[in-house]
Structure formats: C-alpha cells, structure tokens
Amino acid sequence: MSLKKIFLILILLLLCFFLMGQDVQNKKSTNILVAYFSWGNNVARISEKVDTITQASAIAPGHTGKVAQYIAEFTRGDIFEIVVEPKYSSNYSECLDQAAEQLRRKERPVLVKKVANIDRYDIIFLGFPNWWHTIPMAIHSFVEEHDLSGKTIVPFVTHGRGGLERTIRDLKAILSEDCRILEPLSTYERNVDRAKDDVERWLRELNFQR
Image (cartoon, rainbow, N blue to C red; front, side, top):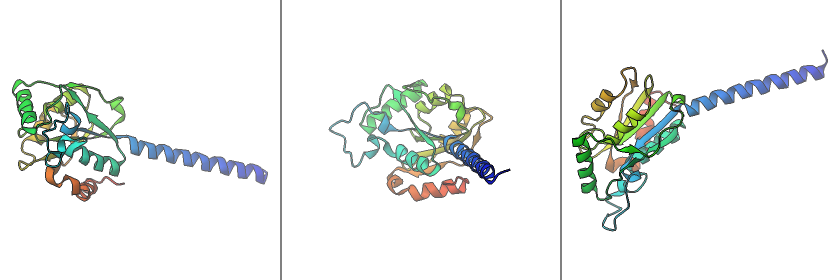
C-alpha cells in the first residue's frame, strides 16, 4: 500500500473520530432542559405604580428566571420559559390573590406553548417560586401537558422567608412514580443576584460538570 493511501486512511479515521466526538458533545449539551415559571415572564403589563427596584421579580426574567439562566449557562442545557394565560398583575399583592384563587379552584392556567420534542430530554431542571407554601398552578399545567415519565427532575425554587415549605412534596405528588427527583435548590429572593456561585456549587454536588 502506498504512503499516499495510508495517509488518506489516517485522515479519514481522524475525521471519523472527530465527528463521533462532536456527536457525543452535542448529546451532552442537548439532553438537559431548564424549564421555569416566573412571575416576570407572566405579567400582563408593568404598572406605573410598581417599584421596579423593590419588585424586580416582576421584570422578566424575574428571580426564578435568573437562577434558570445560571443553570443553563453551567450545564449548557436548553432553556424554556413556562408562559401561561391568563396573565398576572404586576402588583405582587394582586398577583398573590390571583394565585390563591387559582389554588382554591384547582385551576390550571393554559400553557401558551409546549416543549417541542420533550422525549429528547433525559434531565429536566424545573424552577418556580414558592406561592402560598406550594407550587404555582402553572407547574401543574406543565407537568400534565408533558410526558415526564422516567426522567430525572431537578427542582429549583425561589422564595421569601418561607423557604421550600411544601413545594417539593407537592411536586413529587404530581410527578410520575418512575421520575428520579434530585436534591432541590432553594434560593432566597433577595440573594438571587449574587447566587451564581451557590448555584454552581449545588450543580457540582449533583455531579454536573461544565
């Protein structure tokens, strides 16, 4: 066999290994979904009466959205905003009143869009605020409208002084029994802007790597 043919074979083998490596890399970066529900992405309109400094979570992406961005940046996962109808008031007290009424009626807000090809994702980070000691009804809508059976679910919650409260217990109750649920992340709303290091530490503890 001539040196020219040997050289050509080596080039082809190297190209094959490179393409295989790219395929593995693509799978690593696309089997993770970071889905989140945030008040900031579900506000009808910002009222002039709203103080955008003290009520920053009413501005997209909101507290939960910021944590979602930290996670997506570290894991290279795809990000998905859970957007529903009807929208919520930009006044937090009125928003909580709406949320309380939805909870009382067990009302499912309508998803504006669904995740395309949910089957491609093995791991789903699912984020939301703690509303009335539990998960927002929008999370019920998301779980019921997507087949999450057999997937790894990684919850992350933003909250005031109440912490996680019943959020994780109530989330587990609506997920399929064959879902694997990892240790949740709990982030106090006032710490969100400086929580990136805490988020990355949590991800490393769960064996996620950059």
